[in-house]
Amino acid sequence: MDVTTAKQTFLTNQKKLMAFRHAGGVMYYDSVTAAPAGSEYPMSKTGEVFAEETFKLSKSEEMVEAICCLYEHREELDYVLRREVEEEYKHYERTKLIPMEEYIEYSRISNEAQYAWHRAKNENDYASFEPLLSKVVAMQKKFAQYENPDKPAYDVLLDRYEKGLSIEVLDRFFGLLKEKLVPVIHAVCEKKQLDDSFLSRRYPVADQRIFSDYLMEVLGIDRNFCCIGETEHPFTTSFTKKDVRITTHYHENALASSMYSVIHEGGHALYELNPGDELLDSPLSGGTTMGMHEAQSRFFENIVGRSQGFIEAIMPRMKEIFPEQLKDVTAEMMYRAVNKSEPSLIRTEADELTYPIHVMIRYEIEKMLFNGSVTTKELPELWNRLYKEYLGVDVPNDTQGVLQDSHWSGGMLGYFPSYAIGSAYAAQIYHHMKKELDAEKLIAEGNLKPIVEWLTEHIYKYGGLKKPDELMLICCGEPFDANYYVDYLTDKFTKLYGLDK
Image (cartoon, rainbow, N blue to C red):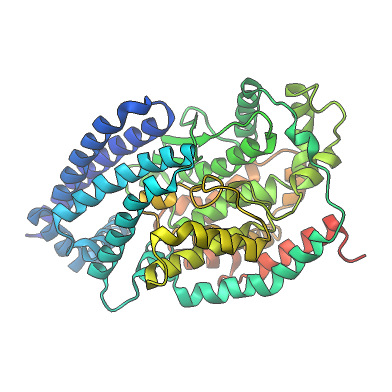
């Protein structure tokens, strides 16, 4: 096959593959936001067809020949196409040994597992979910070994979500967090706790929806290209910069829960809405890795959203939307309340200081699953023991314990560490951003546009063209350094709780 024919074949098939992924993504979004509870069967059958067709397209003899030809001649291609080919070649190398019947079977099992997780969480019934989770883990192990039999399976999965990540790297990273942050957590626990009781007053869901729309406006999200839905476990999905969708979950007696869910998912959305126009129809239009994506969501959720300046900027509108609930609440009270730190059960609602410990627990569990020292049947007991050991909390049931996250049901093993890595990226990026922008002043004015523009210029516009280490050099002029994260958290919570007094 000559280069011209290979290019035509590659681009034609890529267009079809993106259409299938778009349709499949829309179907998934619908299944967890609007579809009736009984739609599991038709959704699963349609998902099987999509999985088979995408497998055939991506693994057809013609497509494989085109990818290999273009990869061999990649230096002759324009930059965007070359990067697409490089990524597709890596994907081909990673999956070429997976038999089609196993790929389709995995798609079926993971679809079933996601529905089973929803039911199990609602009914506090881990036993009904466990057999499917066991199959998901077993197949992920098998696929990892197909990809690289000479590498630990968990290392293979970690590298999928964050290039270069490994057990060795993460052991050092979490070791630093344990060494530096656990003493701060213990010191905070000994101090008089901040008052957040007013966050548990009754906040009608209809009013929270109005508040969510306002928060998206403050973030600068163009609603022509980004909608918001409601689901059990909030997430963001994107198909192109012209179609991005976020979700949240409302609790009438927990205002901060959806508030920070919307800001968090809004950070993901901003990344997806702002790649360069040349990437519009490219599979590289999204973020480069999960860690860099989490850097954006955690940046807006915590560094911006929980800052004193941001709270002061949005407090007048909050009081308009919730006049009775917040009539006796000042911006200072709100700032302190949304930064209250204490060990808790739920990762997505954990405070900024204890949050990485929740991630570390999941990392340790995943390591044990993949090295064979624990089985899926033993996860509830292990989960409960680690929460008691690391955070000092008792887990009352599996719904608030091992079933609280959706990730494992969808096969996203190796994903969790990206949350903590992303938070660390965000702290370092913010440190260097402040050298060029008066970011604190802009946040206090509620003017986030220059901040989004800075992030677009340094990160977003590249989409998936560059790796995290390249982006960190562009943003910061230096490699990743987790000490910025440790210093940021230590300084913030020392001031909040008067630890230096």
